Image (cartoon, rainbow, N blue to C red; front, side, top):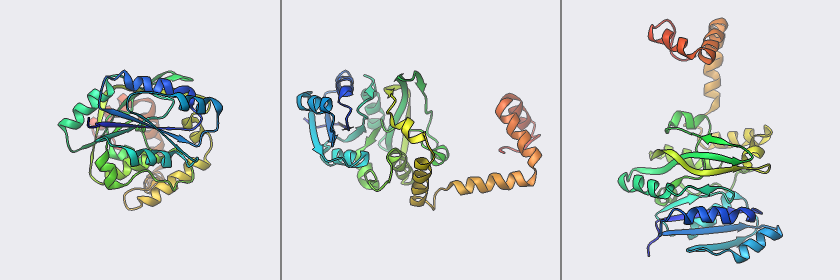
Length: 277
């Protein structure tokens, strides 16, 4: 049987969530799926016990020394037989319709490299996460697409796998989305909840944005890789130039746009103000 989707699940001391993650894949009722769990040097007894007894159709468990998220995903990619890959964090859960809807988009649109969608927060936080339609300008400012996306593996093979040279973990996805975008491939947004995103006290999203050292370092690192395509200094230069030209008008427009968006749009339609700040 040919494999269509390879689900790659790095795991570092998160064994208590693995059954949930794998049961979500089984609930999708897509048969030609393989599951590759990479034990990234877990030391916790519960996780090791779960990994020893974990069973599921199409499941492989790979053990390696602790090398980080990018290395673990790349280890999975090296074994993946699927036409498409989906990186899944060990503490998240796939919704049943995600694979079916994602494959339909991929099969009907060979120029689409990435299919992504909404998420629903749970555990330490509730509510939806709606990233919205793809926009390259928005992506160049900051990442808004989670790793839990269906990716055409041939595209990853061309643009390169996950960067193992990042000093801190957390922005491996943004780096790959930028590489795929700049290579000219398309992204497709599914306007539906595709997975459940668990937020715990140890979640990477909390760790990454708790202090400035990590995001500042990672941002500078990513910008240096794509220095000819992007850079926050261009945005800062634009805003400081506009501000110096007329500080009062700049602040007034910012206030109107932030707190009175309908009035701001009305002024734009009447050409009373210039579009943008």
